[in-house]
Length: 295
Image 1 (spheres, rainbow, N blue to C red):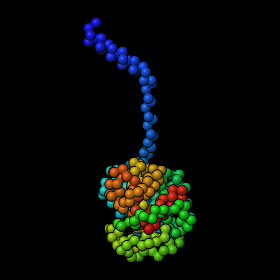
Image 2 (image 1 turned 120 degrees about the horizontal axis):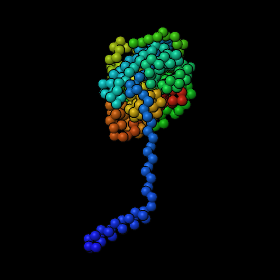
Image 3 (image 1 turned 60 degrees about the vertical axis):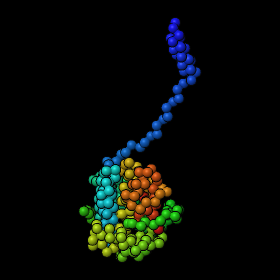
Image 4 (image 1 turned 90 degrees about the vertical axis):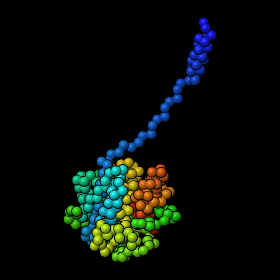
């Protein structure tokens, strides 16, 4: 046999021998399961407006806040290219929420309500897989279920169609005096007291309703829409259960951002955000559906 063939034959024998000594092939790693999106790619938010009792005075600002936020998100390209829709309803009844779940495929609901009304909404919201976000007034966080603001280093925010008959039970107004005029800076306040919006934010709020004279809960409702849009972004899904998980992710990170565009920039860098809007820091307790705001 020629020398060249002998060398090739020897190499083949050596390779086969080494393969036989290497043992079984290592198993491939099991891929991590990724939740399958169940939403319809449109973030539908129901804005439940109290139109009787003391909280009725704050409904126009709440409505304007949600409209302003949705417009800003959609102008910035929406949530992964999809629109945010706001659906206003003129009462905060459980039946209204159930109806919205069926007719507009609601993913989340925003409401300012006393403790009884907020509690009555939790069951239908859970059943319909809607993320309930009740603005944490001092009437529904008398006994907070979470410590809202453990990190004192985060700065306060620097920026900043109705249907149905009003049938809700009259509710008491927050103990803090309603904001009838803007403040140049965010007020130091206890958790549950309404935010006092800056003059700059009031100017933006009036682009949704030029006739506003009362601004209470305008900042809170605006901030909740932005937070929901960010939650849908990190979850890559607009369905209620995904939003609930996403809200924790966008409010408990280590990089503070104060508007939708800057928060998206941080998220693109794969960093965890803490969104702090015009109402200050926020903490969401999904067990009771209440969002608490504070300085």
